[in-house]
Each structure stands twice: as C-alpha cells, then as structure tokens.
Length: 309
Length: 309
Image (cartoon, rainbow over all chains, first blue to last red; front, side, top):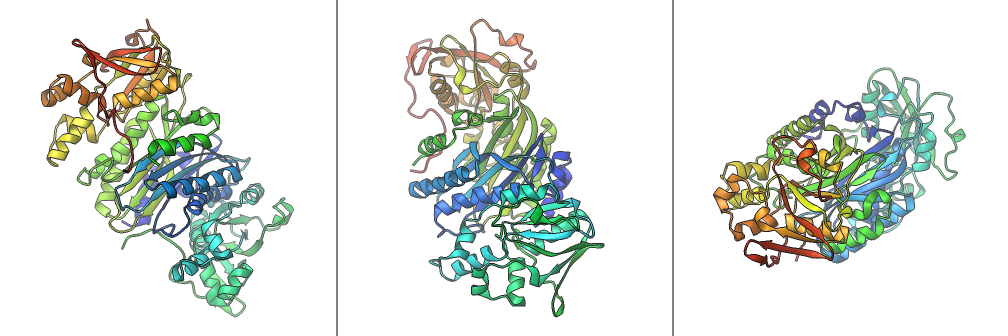
C-alpha cells in the first residue's frame, strides 16, 4: 500500500464537499482554507539543518499551500515533539519568525515526547481566509496557458549540495531551508486562474496531478522553465539540468492555469515576482515535454512521492 | 525545557484571542472549535495495540476535546505515516468507523513515510461547530460544584493490564483502546458550565489546570469519584485504588464546574450518562483531597505530563 493506495482509500472516505475529493492541497470549509503538512527528520529535513530553519520551513510549506489557493494566512495549530532544550528553543524561534512575517496566529496544537532516539516529527495545520475565488487543481481547461511564479530547482539543488557537504551555504541552501511562500502572487492569480496549486514535490509530478484532476493533457517547454542564476551557476541550463529542475521537490513555486489572453502581469503581482509561461493545457491526458530540438522523453521519476519499498 | 517550559514559550507567541492563551483544549475561531492531538507508538499507544483501535483512538481523543467545549463534530484533517500495508489498512478502518460514528468528515491532511524503524506518529486536527456557549477552563468560580461525567481510572487500569500481559482483554482494555467521546453530555453541560474540559491526562492534573486557569482552589471528595464495576473488580475501591483512578490518564471523561443549584440531570444529558458531584471550587489555589477519614495527602504525581528527563 504505497502513498497512492492510501490516498485512494482516503478519497473514498472523504465524501464531504469541503474535502474537494482530497484532490487539492487544502480543504475549503465555511470560508476558510485549511491545510496540514507534517515534516520528519531524515525525510523532509536533515538532522544537521539548523532548528530555526526547520521551524521556518514547517510554517512556510503550509503557507505555500494557502498561497496555492489564494488564501490569506489566519491561524495555525502546531504539533511539536519536545526533548532537546536548545533545539526546541531554536525551532520555536523559527516558528515565531515565520508566523510574525506572514501574519499567522498560533492558536493551538499539541506537544508530545517521542521515545528516545526517534526521528523528530513536526506538524502544522494552517488556516487561511478564502478569497472571492479558491481555484482548485481540477479547473484547468484545454487551451489554458501554464504559468509558474518563482524559480524551479533551487530547493532540490540546495538539498543536493547539503547531501554532498553538510556545511554548504549559499542561496540554493537557503532556498531549501527557508522557502518563501508566494502569498501575494497567489492572491493575485486566484482571481483569474482556472486551476492553481503550489509546486512542492516537483513541477512534473505536481502538474501531472493538476492534469489528472482537470482531465487534461499538458505540453511543457523545457526551455521556458524559470531558473535562478544561482541554479544555473551550479548545474548549468542544459537539458539534464532542466530535467533536474522539473522533477526536484522543495520549490514552493506556484503553478497556475490561466485562460489564454490573461496577462498575469496585469494582475497586480508583487513587482519582484519571477513569472514564466511554461506551456499549455491540451485535450487528452499526460504530459509532453519539448525543447528547441524537439520532443523530450519524460523522465521515469516525475518528482517526490512517499513510499516505503 | 520540559512540556511546561515549551508551553510557556508557546503562550507568549499565541496572543490571538482565538488561542484562548493556549489555556484550553481547543481554539475558538469564527464559530469553529479546533483542536489537534498527536499520538505516538510507544507513548500513547502500544505497538501491540490493534491498528483499528489506534485509528479509533486518534479520532476519539480529539472528539473528546470537542466534547469538553460542547462542540458538534464537523471535519478533520489526518496526518498519517505509512509503511505497512496491513497495519495502514486496519488503521484506516478505525479512522473510518470513528468518523462515521460521530459524523466527522475527513477533509484533508498529509501522508508521509518515516525512516525505517521509526515509531509511528499520527495526528488529527478536529474541527467542530461551536454551540451558543463554549466554556473555557478559565471560567470556574469559587462555590461552583465540580461534576464528572463518565468513569475515572478505567483507561489507566486497562493500560496496566496490557503492560502486565499484552493479550489482556475485557472492558478496561476496551476503554483504554477505544474510548467514547461524551459529545452529547458536553453539549448539554456547555449551556450552563462556568468551566469545562475533558479529563485525558488524569483528573487531578486536569483539575489543577482548571483551577490555575480559573484562579480557584478545589476540594475533592475521593469517595465521590465515579468508578466502574470493572475497575472495582480489578483494583478495589480503597484509598489507593481511588488515588490511582484520580491520577490515571486516558479517561476521556468530562469535568465541569457548574453554578451551585444547577442540577445537571435537568440538562438533557444522555440517559446512560454516569455523572457524579466530586467536590467544589473554593477561594485560593491548589487541590485539597479528603475522604470519610479526613484529609488525604495529594500524591506526588497528579497525572500524565510529557517530559524527557
């Protein structure tokens, strides 16, 4: 029973309209957008990561889900395992900094002690106020233009650097450890997007989920993917590097399907937003990749999935 | 930094009125009552516990928090670690049974894989509709009568049996593994209670929290504690047994401070409710215990607290 089997079972249980068939990053209940992400040591963060960055990341990965629905942060409940005084203090520094930065009020949660030696498991439920529209993953239509806000691949590149040398530093490592949720961009795009979500497990796997939910295919121009200078300096921008960026997780970018003719730059995006049209939705199913040289074979792994083999 | 230090730090962060100063089992936001409990293998449940009962318990311990606020179950988000097909299936059977039994809709959450060998950590955020009144822990007044709905000590006695013999069965083991949230009783009492909470970590420790939040002392008649026949058959009802019942966790009973003169039996409690007046709130601070022989010294440990030493 891998993650997809479990989710299929959960989808059969989750019949309430608020659940949106679990085919979304967040639930929508009584004008609130609600999401929960859990992160585990050794899986979503490294034991060597600074604890303040772990706290920051726990808050911001949840806020990224709210950004993907165009919601405004309101409140959060924290599930925290405790045990090491210094670690716990610094972790709470990160929680507090992120909550203050994005106007999220901590209103509850739970503290538990895990058995000695167990990897840390930390969870957050984030609650946002819904805007006038809450775009689902499922609203994409053939002909929509696919836009990405934010750069792709930085987080995965930062993780790769840390896996090579735990003392690595720099912009890519920062992006892995301290992602920035694109809340204002999400609120602006939500007004027009047919479908929207955050990119957290990798562009191609997240796009495949949007396509499946929308009943569409997608065509993606690999050369249009937005890459940061730091990424290009580290990995280049050839086809191999672009496929790395398209399948790496920890982006916390936004992916939106906008009707053709809508110019996202007319939607009051923050002025420092990186935004790129990367392709289109089409009739059918599945993702086709291409670059200037023609069609590009889809990689075997589209992104990050939780599974024990 | 033990649980109290962490909570003190969290309280300084949690300044939003919805947080109720974290001095409550649940937050109250926009007419919703919201709570989150996380349970860990080897801490809150035994590796040998049937996985369906673990799923049941995860849902019902959260519903017990809603019951303590008089709320009506509405929706839940599940944080689930996956890995063992049979275990995961049976766990979801328990989640589904409890959700169906109490009208709780699963609307979202997260699935993750933990590192091999890590103890399971499972979380649930439960959301209820607030009733006309949502009694806090902090509203108790000197002179209020303390009422307990449900029996005390059964869950702790069940755990003790399982710790002696993992194959133990019977009512006490059932109460430990499959608690029943007292939702209808909570809704009835919420209309009149000055203060209310569920008893989950042990009567004396939970009452001490109510006293501290309310700025009151409490006097408790040890002989008035409601004990089940199964409990008395297993542990007797002498002072030692009653102190065990007063400090054991996993009760999921309700503790309410009602104004003197209010008869809870006039509040449309379910007809099968066990309800007992166990004492009073008084001026001052701290808990005094007594029985027919006179004052009883307070035990060193009032109940269950999470702390790593």
